[in-house]
Figure (tube, rainbow, N blue to C red):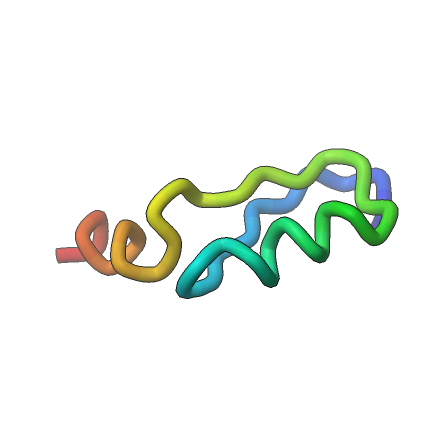
Length: 42
């Protein structure tokens, strides 16, 4: 799973960045976090 591309979402972005730093190679962080995701879904 560590070689798969993943997109992480959290409220502030901190947890998502932490996940990226744990050795997952293809990690993207959704800019704006959960509020941005909720805006897309609206």
